[in-house]
Length: 138
Image (cartoon, rainbow, N blue to C red; front, side):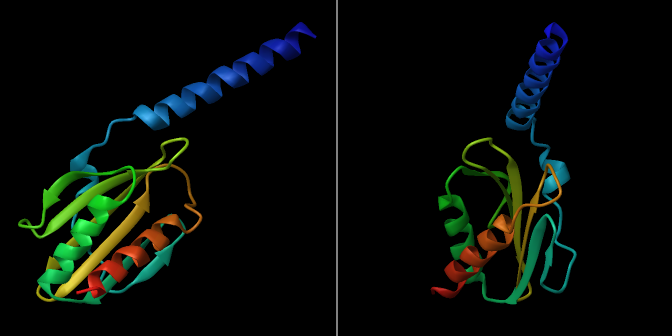
């Protein structure tokens, strides 16, 4: 019986340690603030990419909308740079998702992806769809 209790306590400690790591893991802007190389919209298991024809005002609106998302902050870039990357953390555990938006030559690109795990259950795709609505509200 003591063995089972020790195993249970060990599993709990490991689980808490994993959750603390996810919450406190440092963000490396140079890893996430990269150009969006794709030229077509697509959905992936852990994220999504959207590529749309737009004007610069749409880029500014998407940036403003992204900054208003709950638990979201800019980690690199600016509208003046033509690329901005944000981190958005999930409400309860704090899983980080990274979203990059960029604008060049009349093309607006958005790339949202998870950091940990394989599937985001469509959260990043939905975030991009909300941001694209903001782009069109001009």
